[in-house]
Image (cartoon, rainbow, N blue to C red; front, side):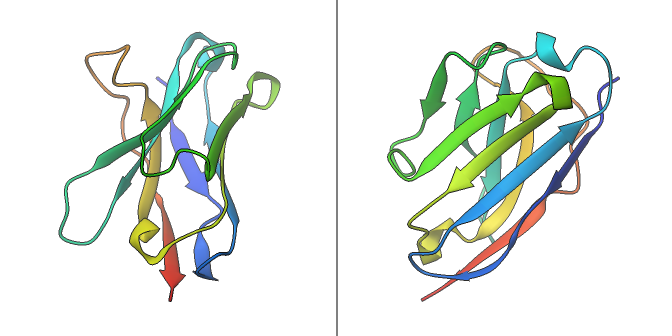
Length: 119
């Protein structure tokens, strides 16, 4: 079973940047297409980006396209989310998990990492 640990969140001013990391345990990490999700206060979880197993293909929802970049290092069992030009509406707890476009179920969710963008 793969376990997920997110990190890298924090408080940043609008227009700033953060880089999130998701470290996965387990030997089969490279077999999974991965995604980043977020949950803002009072809102449902939102899927925001995904990356293929090799890293050669990526996907972004419109609200983050051009500002966020997803990447992965399979040798380090880690997926990253580089977030630039942050906006207050990006404030949320961010999680990684399997790409919901590929899989019908999820791994156990990690604790997430809080991102707060001040105006």
